Image (cartoon, rainbow over all chains, first blue to last red; front, top):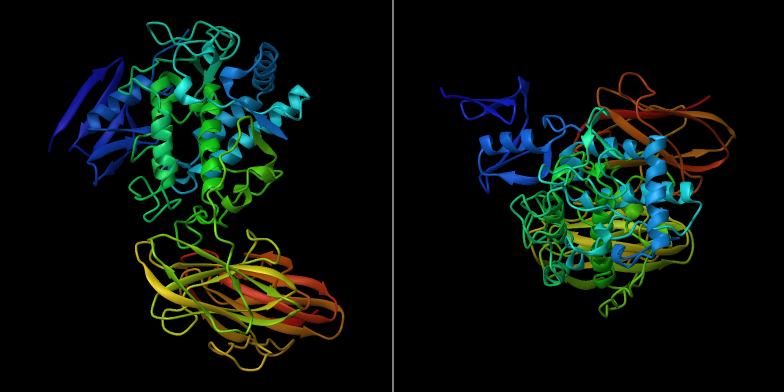
Length: 71
Length: 500
């Protein structure tokens, strides 16, 4: 059993067993494209990522739900 | 009529009119409703799927109607972002239209949608900060080139199984950007910032971007008029030609892919001369009662189109012959996009066969192979049931329901199957048609004296998940069509007609 935790741009990423992903405690559903071995999520519908961790970091960086950008 | 122009060619007055209309919609809360309609849609129902293009065509069309309403200009069209000439130094990014790139932190600080003037919302509809952009900073530093567009424009068919991001060959998938040079996705990623998530309509350039996507699809349709939308049927629910698309409200036009296939019928005009369609052969005419026409699906995914004339109301049988597993869809009368019926295997072997009473008019048959990956030969014909016996299989009689008689026991034994019954009304009165059993049935009532006009339809007004229709009917022959509510569902049921 593996467990990866990191804080990225203010968001806490938890990945268990390379399958279960939460950001700030919220479970994130994702799709693994077995043909291309890429990961994607409904949060970022136009891109695929090389790993679940890359996807999680992109969600924190690029979605208004998790990004910390304000005026 | 919406006149859609290259955003970089708009006059100062046209820019001001577009920006003002967008800002009014934002102030009214209507703009944010469009953001939420996109943000909260099921991603796999509107992206990475066949309905990607018709869903977004209807989406930007709806915004266009709102822009026309608030501007008072019935010809106001959404400008299109002409990618090959739309990079960071193009005039569309000037302060009188979209404003420019984000600052070092990604915040847009120029133009009418700059920080302090425009607030984006999250998928819950709550304010979520300023508009963000980061041109070319997310791994795709360049926009689609004209050569890339030309490459995608040559791809057929429209789409292919498995109808998702791995479909190939597929014009839709290439235009969307999961295979090939990447057009649509590249535009989102190139802008970056607010254009990356499902809330991407927060950036008004979203609509210009999808106007360009829609323009390319429109031009492809003109170039390949015989390459129809796929899947016609048999795909995931919500993706087939006549399925209602998700997250698409009722409006001036329908919510199915078939309702938005014709841009011209929607009143959309582009400023540049549309490419001339490649010479296409005239749609072959099937002579009713004559020998069937030999044909072939030479390229996987291809659909053949035929037409035939019905001079007067009567029962007809449309059929294919041969060893190929054909799938046939009937359209008409006088409308190549109005679907009447479809069939897979009702004929001999794996042949398709449709038996219908048809009123006078021109009808169209689209024939493809059941497997989008196959090729094969077949023959197709039409015969009038009352005519002297000719080539092709004989008709399958439509079962008759006796009013106040015992019900008919039947079943939906295959996906997409529907059963048709007829009954005669001799006295004008109320009549009740209902199904019974444990199957979730859906029923439609047609007539009088034709299977085509739909009088009523119902899903669950009967007991449990059964359908029930009660209608006042004048004398004549009526037809009842029963299918499973789910396109993939099967199950037994009974159907009965009672007076009163």
